[in-house]
Image (cartoon, rainbow, N blue to C red; front, top):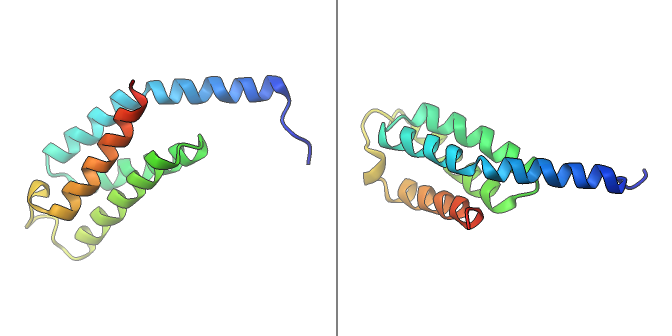
Length: 108
């Protein structure tokens, strides 16, 4: 398999930069679902984010999103979604903070 051309590499880099520019908006979406205590949407958005960040080779955001997604999924599968407030679940809070820190790393 041949390496990507210089032009293709440049285009991928431009796409990655555009993707990173969307982090404030993505962060705000995640925050809104967090505040609303909506684990279903939080899980879905984290799932999308984990995949897209991995595609753009941004492993810290991908891993943080995947972790929060898995925790939401576990809470939902155990029928705990309605009985908890996300801000009272220390494991969820820590995962959320890690994801927000990962976003913030790219907004500098």
